[in-house]
Image (cartoon, rainbow, N blue to C red; front, side):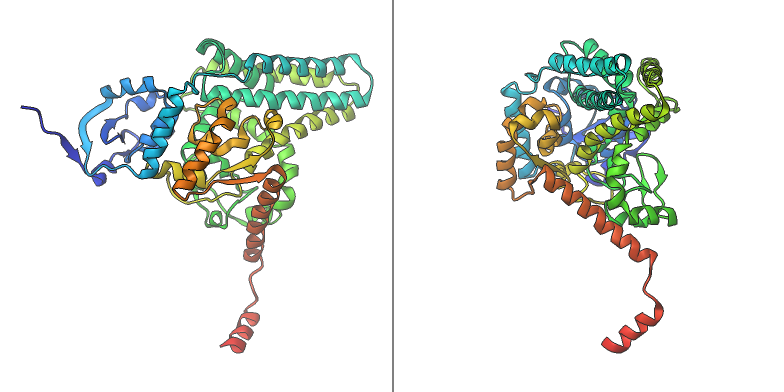
Length: 447
């Protein structure tokens, strides 16, 4: 006689959502991923954020078909009682399966080798301009070219963190360390830790690190309640300093973006020298040391401090274009308070994301971020296919009456500034409360 299935309720599943006790549901089967969280390639945080609930859609989005065969060793023997799948999720999974049959997840046609050559060329011209010219204008342009090489290295770091861009995992790792740590001074390990959390908790004010920029920026007045960052494990205090800075954030946004990579340097150091488990920590630190060797030496070759400062500012400011691009896709979109939910994966990704409308010849400039909705739904999909799958995603959103927001690059900038300005004005109101006598006068007048 076949053994009857054992079931647990959703409430019982929710009892297993803390460090040391992590259970998830995938297609109605319950898995204990507590031990696996220590070895999970994506880190423990995604599992912790989705523990105690169904995580099927997130699993489909992030894992290739081969990953399914490894689930059985985590199976608890329990099934989720009254498990059901929404129509949106059914269509999302069908679409993912169709893309897989078409081989889109395996066909990486965007030419990483060519891009690496372009990066090397930009870097070489920049170094040549510094070492072989006495012209201040050439030195300024050399700084700008270095900034452009950092932007393109950023796209490789982004792509290689989501899927294998080279012929093997070993070469993929080499490309990550060379373009991220050695060339740009940014820890690829930190970026993956940060970026995975962003994808899982897209636009959650408490769980998405890409919206946690207090006390400099606040994309929503909800942050004025001094919410807790569960990513950084600290309270985001909305004190007098934060209130002042946020009040002018729509003016300071672009200047801050020009020097945003300084924050990435700091975050990389904090990550690599923290007590948390860091895969290949030695490689990461060595790569960072390479950057902090060649870059100061290159700057020191300039003839005076004025040109050195000009070179650094030019390189950082050009890279600021990419930092602005990162913000455009999410700052003006819907936000929410609380943990991410696996039950409405598709809806949360579309609600919190904005696509940038552009011609195909501008795809190189946006690095795939122009199709941010598609990227968030299918993060393993090589960016060369994002334009191809966009109509399918739009059709699915239309079928289920879901948001599919798009804007031109210019309009996206306007929307971002408007979002920051709206929060800034609300912060100013809190800084300058209405005098009591005016309140009394209003009461007397209007009853």
